[in-house]
Image 1 (cartoon, one colour):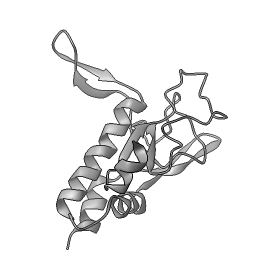
Image 2 (image 1 turned 120 degrees about the vertical axis):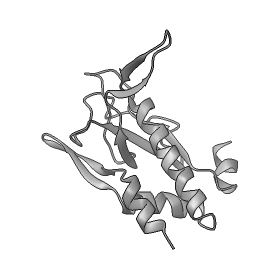
Image 3 (image 1 turned 60 degrees about the horizontal axis):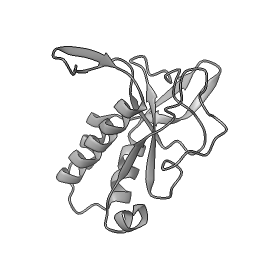
Amino acid sequence: MVQSGTRAGVTWPTPRGSAAAGNRADDLEEYPARFDGVVAVAAVDDDDRAAPFTSDGDWIDLAAPGVELLGPYPDGGWAGWSGTSMAAPLVSGQAALLRSLAPSKSAHDIVDLIDETTVEVTRAGSAIGVGRIDVAASIAAAAP
């Protein structure tokens, strides 16, 4: 499914490193994040520090905000939500926005554009190794 979707131009951002705090699973090969053509997303906080629950490793492609994001609460109202499952949809939305602005670009080109316009992020004592998405910069870079 992933390979056929990728051939059809689908971008596959996925949550990455959703292991519990203290069990970051740095040494595990997690799927679907490790599949070719899938964008593995780590979570960062509002200071661009890697979230304590996110994994790092050479399989991570991008980082996105994923700590205390405001979202609807099931019983009504709003709550702060955290997780790589909060970060990955931001990358999906960014990819969709860029695809609408530059429909002739391939999914690979869109991911490259997102990657080229990221902001460097680090965790104390350990670089996460990827950049945090910058939607405004990617829009500016995609503009004709």
